[in-house]
Image 1 (tube, rainbow, N blue to C red):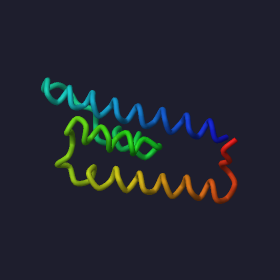
Image 2 (cartoon, rainbow, N blue to C red):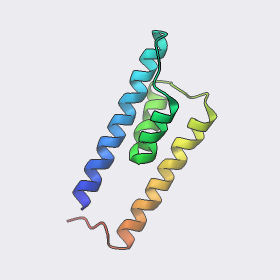
Image 3 (cartoon, rainbow, N blue to C red):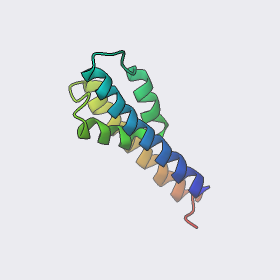
Length: 94
């Protein structure tokens, strides 16, 4: 269970990071963008850290208050969820 959870979080974070990169590139080219709802979906599914890193690495969406506040809050929520799963014994490091 631990490896599945870790792999899932890694995949979501990598995807969110790359989506932020792609959206920044599309913005510079004045092309159709990735909707914020898609960015939030991947952040909510566990990719909040990747979204935060992408936001600051690419200087993208840093003026959008709901993203600047929302992504770190989602990350905090994921940290709490992971701590609870470890505390309850659902996640065990083999």
